[in-house]
Amino acid sequence: MKLANQKLIYFSPIIVGAVIFIFILTLIPSVSPEPKDLPIAFVNADEGMTVPAKGKVNIGDQIEQNMKDSSTEQSSVKWIFVSTTKEVEKGLNKQKYYGALIIPKDFTKKQATLHTAQPDAPAIRLLVNQGMNTAASTIANQVLNGAVDKMNENMRLQLVKRFEQNGTQLSANQALALAAPIQKTVINVNETGTHSINGNAPVSLFQPLWMASIAGAAIVFFSIQKITVSSRKEKIINQAGLVIIGAALALAAGFGLAWMAELVGITVPSFLDTALFLAIAYFSFFTLISAVLSWLGLKGLPIFVIILFFGAPLLSMAPEIMPDFYREWIYPWLPMRFMVDGVRELFFFREQLTWNHSVYALALIALISLCALFASALPVSSVKKEKSHSI
Image 1 (cartoon, rainbow, N blue to C red):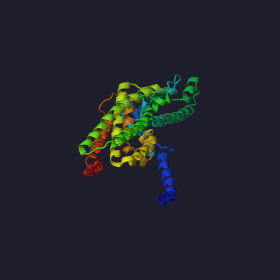
Image 2 (cartoon, rainbow, N blue to C red; image 1 turned 90 degrees about the horizontal axis):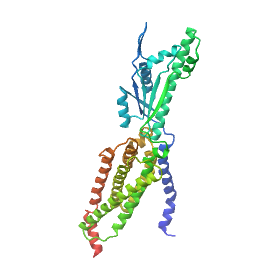
Image 3 (cartoon, helix red, strand yellow; image 1 turned 30 degrees about the vertical axis):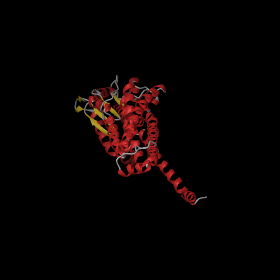
Image 4 (tube, rainbow, N blue to C red; image 1 turned 45 degrees about the horizontal axis):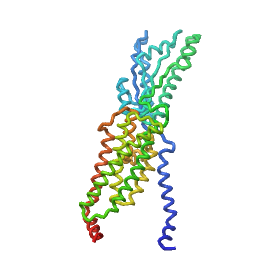
C-alpha cells in the first residue's frame, strides 16, 4: 500500500467526523423550531358605547391594552397595532404580517347584550396569511385562536361573576352564550389551496432547478474546457458560447419545470410568468456555478452541494422561526431564497412577472457572475500556458 493512501486512512476518522458535523449543522434549524417576534397585526375598530353612570365604555380598548402588555412579556409574537382593516389587508398582501386579529366596531355593543335575555355574541375576525409561509401561518393560526380562547375565558368568568352577584337565573340562550361569549371567524388570505403540495411548491420547485443548474453548468463547463484555445480572445469566445448555451438551457428548464409542476398536480396560476421566472432563476444559478467552476475547477462543485443541504431546511422556514445564527449568517447568503420568494409571489399573491425584488436580485447575481466568468479568461498566465501547450 502506498504511503499516500496510508495517510488518507489515518485521516479518515477526521474526515468522517467532519462530514457528520456538517450534516448535523443542517438539521439544527428544523429541530424544535421556536418563533421569535412573529409579526401579527391587531386592529381595534370598536366604537364603544355610552353606559349610564359609567360614561364611555370600550371593551376593544381594554383588549388592546392587554395585548400591548402581553407583547412586552413574550417575544414569540410581535403584535403590530394597525389603525384600519384596509391597512391590514394591504400589509398581508405585501407579506408584512403572518396574520391579523380584527375587533369589529360593534364589539362593545354586542358584548353588552350578553347580560340580557337576548344575547348576541360579538365576533372577532382572524386573518391567516397562508401563502406567506406554511409553517409560520400554522403558528399564527394557533396564536390567534389561542388569543381569542383566552378572551373567551376571561369574559366568561366576568359574566358568571356578574350573574352570581345579581342572583340572575340563566336562560337557555344566556347559557349557550356563556359557552363562547366571543365568536371567531377564521379566514385564510392568499390561500395555498387545499392540497399540501401547493403550499410547499416554492421549495419543492427549487430542488430540481438547483440540481439541474449544477448538472448543466458542470457538463457545459467541462465540455468547453476540452476545446483547445491559443489566445485570450478564443477563450472569451468560449465563455460567450457557454453563456449562450446556458440561456438555452434556462428556457428549457423553466418551461419544462413549469410543465412538469402542472403534471404532478401543482396549481400554476400563470404558466408563462412562472416558466419565464424559473428560466431567469436557472440562468442566474447557472452563471453563478459556471463562474466558480471557471476559477476553481472541479473543486468548486462541492460548494453548491453543501449550499443545497444547508439551504433546503431553511427555505421551508420563516426567518422568524430560524435560530439567530442561521437567520443572520446563513439565510441572507442563500441565492436560491430569491427564487423561492419569487415563486411564492407568483403562486399565492397573484403577482405578475415584473421587475420586482426577486427578479432584481437574481439578475444582479447573474450580472456579477458573468463578470467573474469573463474575468477568468483574462489572466495572462493561463494564456501563456495554453500557448506553450499548443506548441
